[in-house]
Structure formats: structure tokens, C-alpha cells
Image 1 (tube, helix red, strand yellow):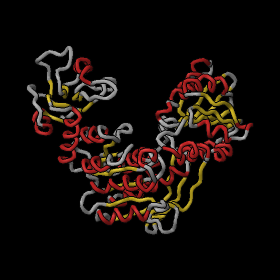
Image 2 (cartoon, one colour; image 1 turned 90 degrees about the horizontal axis):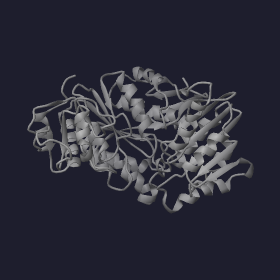
Image 3 (tube, one colour; image 1 turned 45 degrees about the horizontal axis):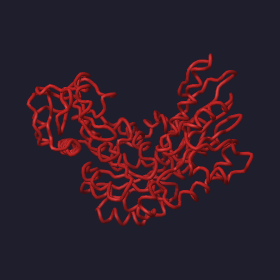
Amino acid sequence: MSALWTSAELRGATGGTLAAEIAATGVSIDTRSLQPGDLFVALRDARDGHDFVAEALARGAVAAMVDRDPPGVPTDAPLLRVADTLAGLQALGAAARGRSRARFVGITGSVGKTTTKEMLRLALGALGPTHAATASYNNHWGVPLTLARQPRDAAFAIVEMGMNNRGEIAPLARMARPHVAVITTIGTAHIGNLGSQEAIAEEKADILLGLEKGGAAILPAESPFLSQLLARAKQAGARVLTFGESARADIQLTDYVGEAARGTARVLMDGLPLSVHLAAPGHHLALNACAAIATVHALEGDVVAAAEALRGFGAGAGRGARVTLALPGGTALLLDDSYNASPASIRAGLSVLAAQPATRRIVALGDMLELGEGGPAMHAELASDVASAADLVYCCGPLMRHLFAALPEKKRGAHLPDSSALAPLLAGAVRPGDAVLVKGSLGSRMALVVAALTSLNDKSSAGGAGVVP
């Protein structure tokens, strides 16, 4: 494998010192996923990465970026010494962006960021070598890490950008400097921190502050905040393409046919009709596909080849993955949408659940977080949608109590304090023929519920869990 970073490049990018002459083939911040040949960056988060430098070197890291002496490491170890490791990683990311000849796409939005990124990985991957993060690396360390890992020969790069508070998108956008900026939606996620959807729209539009000269903005045509986004795009000098279902959209979703496990979108772009077949169901996914096609069009790529490549798209773990649960006497279906939640994404998940052929449709919901003072009402307002899609509802967390109380009594399974209490109860309630949707904000830890359900396979002679094709 060719070198991603040489010692000279690391010194030049970070201003740090490194006595050894090395050639790094990758960049890692986690010893659990580190590969031999990686540069290990000792960041501080819940734990201090400096405490894992010795382990990283033992696992094959060719060097470690540090800002203090790591414990248990010889003085002659290959250490890239910098003033601050986070600043060093950000400098490395900026240097990677500066040397790259790839066309960059930046994506933000209240929901659909990661899904659109994964669709673009396929769509642009059909046109040339494409780089994107392996997970939702969309924050102050995730964006520079994505950039620092950029292969030298990449033709396209996709950078996801998220936020929790005002002022977080702009520095990420200026670092990534996208040629195309995509805003998927303006929703209520993090409204508790920003105060209003108008403020959320303003923050999301800050992705345009990093747009390269002559770049394009991909905007949601049906958003109530479209005029606000268009004004920001004009300020940035961006070309604009809109996507959506209205006739005024530049990339229009004219029809969607959904089945239990897949969907087909009919798309019209500049008079060209396209059919997009997705190996995952959901009207919301069809709109994400429109955003992806609009992006390829803005990059002057082959939209027909890109649309065909989307046949390979399927929902990932925690984002709607379909998992078969082997139970005594039959199987059940788990829809693992546990990674995150907002009112819009819960409604989207419920529409997928409602389309499943099942004896019973069950939903397990954890709190939607960072909604501010309106949180209790936003939870309660989901009751009619939940009751329409599900036969039985299980909830956990103090906010979900408001939804649970608003449900018809016959729909109520149980409300528990947290996901650790809910997990064994739900695992004991699932029967053959059920379809179960699990969803909640990341902080609600609904992955514990998913783990309890998938562990049922280990207790059954019917075999192990498997993703449904």
C-alpha cells in the first residue's frame, strides 16, 4: 500500500517534530480499529488517547501524534509531537484537503445526512475512486479525520457535517471546502440548543460559507425555509439545484412505489426520466436519492450510471437494517433504526413498519433528545402516527412517557425508565410473526434493546441472526 503520509508531510502539515522517518498508510484514533501502518492520533474525549499510545504502537502503528509524554512508551518511540493533538489532526485534515484534486461534496441537514452520504458513495463510486467516512464522522474531530484519511488518488470525496450548537458548521465547511453543498432537511433536531427552526436553517446554511467558487447548493424544494436557504446560497454565489416532489423542483420525485423490503423511485431531471431501485423501503429514502442524483448532476457526472449504482443501497445497522430473529416456532423481523431519532425520522420509520407483513407490528421508542421546552409536546404529538402504524407500543425514558400517556390503552405495551429496563421486557414479549421497530436518540441507548433482541438467536435452535436480503 502506498504511503498516505510521510514524515516530511506530517511535519509540514502539523508543525510538529518527528525524529523517525516513517510512511503511514492510514490514520486512526481508536486502537480497537487500528490497522498496521496507521498513524495513531491521541485525542482526548471520554478517555485520553495518550493512555493507549503504547497499545497502538504494539498493534502496528508506525507513529503516534501526541502533545505530552505517553505512559509506558520508550523515549525513542516514533512520536509526532505537536502542541495539541486535536489542532494537529485538524491541521492534517486541512493539508489533505489542500493537496487533493478530488471533487468534494459536503452534506448537512437535520436528518438524512449519513443516508445521503452512503448513497453518494455508491453513485459517485460508479464514476471514479470515491472517499467517505466509514461512520458518522461529522463533528470537530470527525471531519478532519475523514479528510486526513483521503487517498491520494480519490476523484470524489464526501464529507458529512453535523452540529449540536450554533457556530459548529462553519469551521467544518471552511476546512472541507466543498464544490457541492447539500442540505437534506431542516427539522427540529437540536432545537433545544438553537431555539428555533429558523436558527437551525441558518446554522445548516453555514455549510455554504466553505463553498468553493462556482460551487453548487443542493436544497430541499419543499422546505418551509427554502427562501432563507436560497438567500444564503445567493450570498455565497452558488448555483442552486432543488430536489423534491413539487413541479418546481429541479430534480423531481414524480412517483414512489414501496414494498416491504425495497422501493422504486421515478425521478425527472431536466426532462430526463430516471428509475431508481433501492434495496431498502421508505419514501424518505427516495428523496435522499433525489438529493444524491442532484449532486451528481451538479458535478456534471453520469446521472444514469449513478442512478443504476443506487441499486446497491441498503439500510445499515442502526439506520433501518432488517434483521431476522430466529425464535422457537418461527421468526420475527427487527427493523434496527436505533442510531438516532427526531419527529421526522420516527414518522419515516413508522411508515416502513406499517408496510411490513406481520402478525403484530411493535414499536419500541426511546426519548428524542435536545428538543428543549417543546420536547414533551413533540413526543405526545407522535401518538396518532404511532397508533396508526403499530399494534403494540413500548417506550422508555421520561420524555416518551408523554407519548405513552397519549396512546389508546389497547396500544400500550409498557413504559420503562430506560432502555436497560426495556430491553429484557421486550425480548420476552416478541413472538414469531412480529415486526419490531426500535428507534430513539443515541443518548437513549436503544442499541441495548437491539442487542437484547438479536441475542434471542443464541437461545434458539433455529439458527443465528442475519440481515434480510
